[in-house]
Image (cartoon, rainbow, N blue to C red; front, side):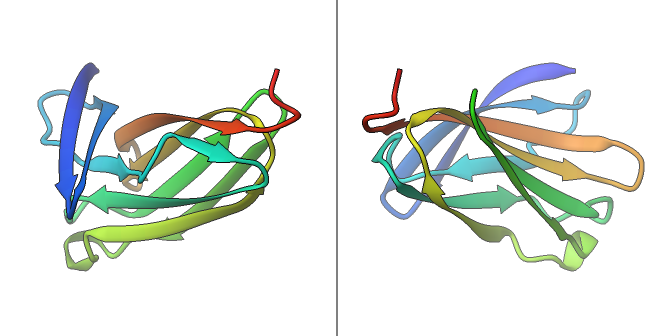
Length: 125
């Protein structure tokens, strides 16, 4: 698998994400955030851009830190699916988080994007 840097331009936001793309496949998924630093308890809105494709069957988004893990998953309708999906993680406590968006087919991971965020507050070490 290759690691590629993907640049997404959406409205006034330019976000660079690093993703794992299988083989020579085109970019499959990207994460768009408005900011990388939030105050606890944080509400983090994540816009995930997924290139529609007949192989796309599910989209999983994760917020992962040393003390907390949250995930959400939705079913995709292949090439007929919309391109943009919004996820919200409410009440995230202070910490360093890795946000992961993963697009899966019925048998494999088609693409993954990650983004780092920091939630500041009394609990941040």
